[in-house]
Length: 122
Image (cartoon, rainbow, N blue to C red; front, top):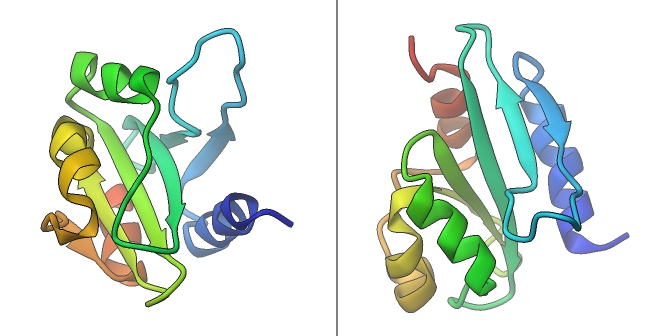
């Protein structure tokens, strides 16, 4: 099983209060991996990234999506080295592409990342 698929299953398992729709869309490049809907009736998107280094790779389409949609979009990164989760707001995609995991995340750790997404618009 690919690392991103494993990560998706971890996200799903650890966020039972969020209804997820996995978006696998080849027709619209750059659209994030997940559409989430939480108990506060709030929609948001999440791009999943798994990395073995400090660098996080984005396609130009993924960067463009987050630049055009700076609110209610997130990038959730799992480091395979530290096994840590980091959550970034979509508006920070350019800095994240440049600085990688050196960029301060809006949340770090599995529990904190899941809690923020579950409590959006509360």
